[in-house]
Length: 384
Image (cartoon, rainbow, N blue to C red):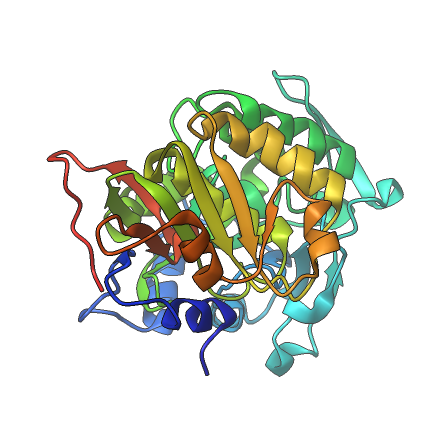
């Protein structure tokens, strides 16, 4: 069944857009079990500590990750240990729904960032961010922070320590860290000298030797590519170095840019807004970006969406004079309360903007999986 965005794209007149997306693996994709077992057997940056009490941190349902396979790999490796699961909710509503149904017998809790009483204070980072983390992390012998490496609009890439900080931190500390997204080097695909990423890593590393990561790298369709376990920064960087080749897209900016992706990124404006990061290189000054997302889960908290995400983290990266329009299932009044203009349909927007075969739009499909690069020769390679 086609997604909302795919249905919108299917109604467009052929030739009125050029489509580009990250390339899926045609061959060579592996299976998660052997990749994860090998990663746990050969950790990067030192052996795993002996552990009786293990806390495995998993992402919530806003992230598409192989949680079942990750947890099964940990269970195989630590069959005689006490394993607890902590869902890294960040500032999202706590939700245990990310725990795979096959593993409902595990002791699990969804982190609540508003519950200061269930945190332990570790200190303050050099940039002044207090570090108060879920109490389970302080009591564990080993914290295994799981995650999937993919582009992130201000932390460079996801994965690494993000499940611990901000995922299991106190709300006010998360917000303080996220203000760093306004810094010039806090951007999509950038890890080195990224102040927001560095602050996250400094905060999480206050857990000391008990912290390790178990990260995976998949292609745009979720097919297994690699896994790494070990030091929270070193193991993450090893996978992130390979990620660019999977997610890079070369763009020539267009007057009209369309960005779209699949669920779960499309389920709320809070999540879908992150697709706009590709507009830095994909749209011309005074052009239009059309964000296509069903937003079946609503907008998310408007102050966070309008100010914390768009004004602070995205608008400074957009070329001057760019207009953002939203094609969604939301009613006009709800859209008008956001940073975006209401658009009835993608087809109607093309007509309004005069998009034609002579001046086609640029369509970035799977925009949340892209690291955009400027086309060196002035002409990007498009895939239909």
